[in-house]
Length: 420
Image: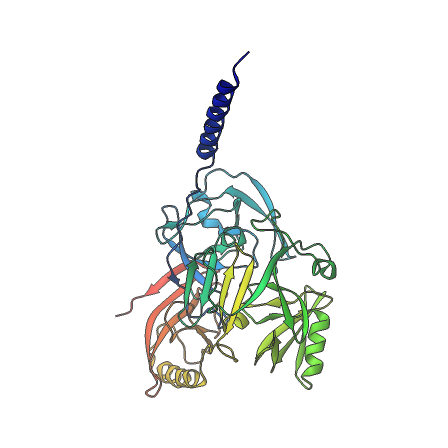
């Protein structure tokens, strides 16, 4: 029989060994390195997407759309050769797809960098030929979805055109504005049921769903989808849309059909109420029969926006009532006088006297840069012409041609005009 004193010693030694094993088996997890703050395009929130430059492995930098409305990250077809062997197929759903759905090839998550920092991975990426170059000629590499964004606390500063990656363990000191709870909701559950319990946790267990925040719209509290990939102010559920129209009598409405079935109603709301804050000139739409409301980028851009995904909160700090200005009336009038003079003098390459076109704000970094797409008579097989101008002086109607190029129907640049 072992003496009691020896048993006591043995127990003490075993306890020390177990504690040592626990300490070794549970090392403190190293925190991932946060990307540094980076600029996004000046046109974000002014009718254009929010774009940042990312690098895929050893490729050049590409513009990626930061899209909280996309559950997964999508890459354009031309990057497929850098992704290795496919791991399967994935059904994807986006509003702009013909019929709304498509089948895309699925790949393991690649090395995707913002600056020198590798981004936290999702489960996989998909490749789709629906990701194309923008009309302005920017090479859009893909869509950065919630499978990656969910790992970060990000702040969107539309005054500084900057996205900041913040420490989610550092609590808000009151400078972020009002907090709204975030949830990720399964899309096939009716919204009336989903609004009561949309409690799918981060990181996502489900691949498809909607990022939603609990918000009061026009005095009614509901779960509202948050979609930075919606360039407009968003949409309202059918009942909320009718409520907004009744409050603001006499506003013009429009209705159009998509694929001959879905009716889209639209209106310009002079007063948009969100949690007691009022906004003006909100361009919203509503799908016939839809019970979902969406906050889009144009409305979000009127605020300092902070998405604290690890702690499931969104913060809004209102900075302005009206929308960010895309093109001022002075700039538009000045350009019309300039382009009329230049067409008469033949000062713009490939531009005919009878050509008319549309001036749009450039989605690059700098303000005051615009693209011009002539819409005059062209042969169907002739490359489409694009121009980029920089406003030097509104008072003098002085505009500098920065770039002139032509693209084919597949958005490939086929000719560049040399600019002195």
